[in-house]
Image (cartoon, rainbow, N blue to C red; front, side):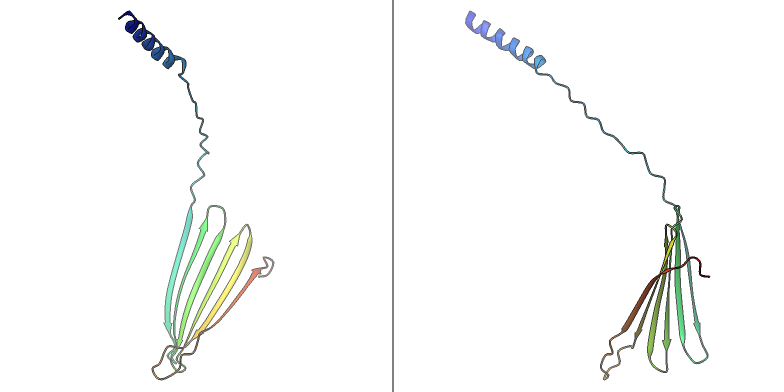
Length: 137
């Protein structure tokens, strides 16, 4: 009986002593970067349409965005339909200014609507892109 009491006391002492002896503390340091300033963007949108006396119809839409860092991005899309030739021209112009360098891209697509009995004519697309010289007005 004494053996069991001693064994129990030893086990209890080892459990409590072992728990205290094996206690460890881990410290984790997390570095949180400072919050960046809020990004402020200003958008301006325009749209319009016109009909010429010969029946040509034009619709234009555009948007210009400016951010807090001075970058400017703008694009306009103009769709023109020519009823006498059944041709539709779509022109997209984009101006992007990043760090004071302006790049202009112009894309033009000429297409014809599908007419039953006539073979489809694939659209013709041309794209031109260049850097705008700031000294040229």
